Image (tube, rainbow, N blue to C red; front, top):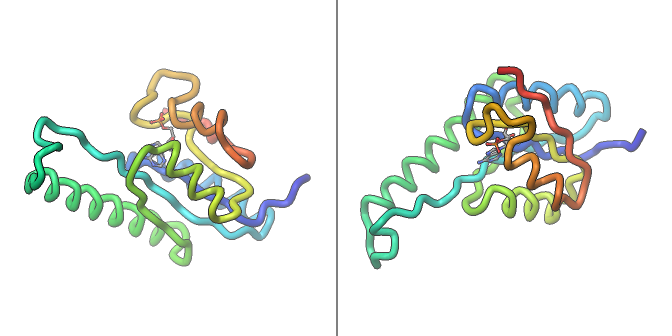
Length: 144
Ligand code: AMP
């Protein structure tokens, strides 16, 4: 079986993220791999987003960024305190794939569906990654 040394775990901020991370840790243990976590914050476009200075949206962005960082820190604390983690801003698919290419990731672990895709066999993020990934993608079947 192909060895996995550098695994990227993509999580949203739902409870299901734990299922994704637990499985990624199990895979990582099999290969003595380095794991890192990524969460991507998609910019919120509001009516005022194109104003030169939009304090509401700046405050909201900062709040969401801190919330995402706190979420990653808490989930790390619970499962793998030494794990690297980052919050990126932009399109979920593009940021995960960019990070994977720039960091020589050899496996991306992702949930089958998250908050966008309940009821679907495969959510939009997993589907998008499968179509554009430079490396293998492991999809964790989320149990509702
Ligand atoms: P979804 O496309 O919302 O059905 O989510 C499917 C899976 O994609 C989730 O279980 C996560 O593993 C991953 N995912 C969804 N949104 C994000 C995000 N903003 N950042 C990183 N990973 C995500």
